[in-house]
Length: 291
Image (tube, rainbow, N blue to C red; front, side):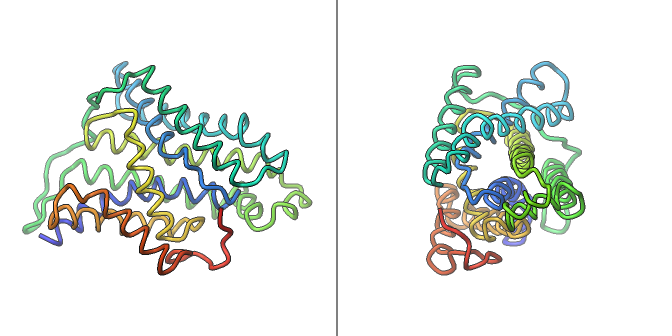
């Protein structure tokens, strides 16, 4: 039974890893906790729902959600955060601003799509596989594979492309990067797009797995993704993946042995313990700036 829950947790944890990576990307560049990320995740799921409602299918829903959600994150940066950074506003001001954006996006979704839970087509499903006492569904495999592909793509972009090199340079020393001819503002904008992409993919995956969408779905998922990012070491991409998987496994085991009422509390308990014992996370540096 435990092995079954571990498998379930790994599958679910890959989605939390995607959300956590979105947090880590922005934090790695700006040292900012993007607390609007949960609402952006819900926005991505609703963009997928919009395309599915037009009968274009899940592949088109993924593409449309990625583009529109990435643009939403870029718009948030250009309209709200960039002007504040230009005025050398403190991080607490930026944090309050993104929290405001979170509520704006959430209420916008309620106005446009209403606040009820809406059905979403099942994620790509090709049956159920039985390995001994372990059962794995096609939907779980689809969720795991799609999340893994996007995480590998993101890793390739960050570590093996010119824009990825610019991102890493901007993270280490923005002033020196500017002197070397790197347009840090463009790098920040692209980083927000990647963060939005992660949120969109995670949103559509979860919507297809649980077959429902609603405006407040990002509240719980966003906090779990944040817990995963902190656990792995926020700003460290591979740490976010490890953190997501650990949160997913812990959540599934807690659900099986304690009950579904404690499902969400598990992530927050882990977050509390990490902050208490090792605030920098499993792979984070002790000198990470605090917001």
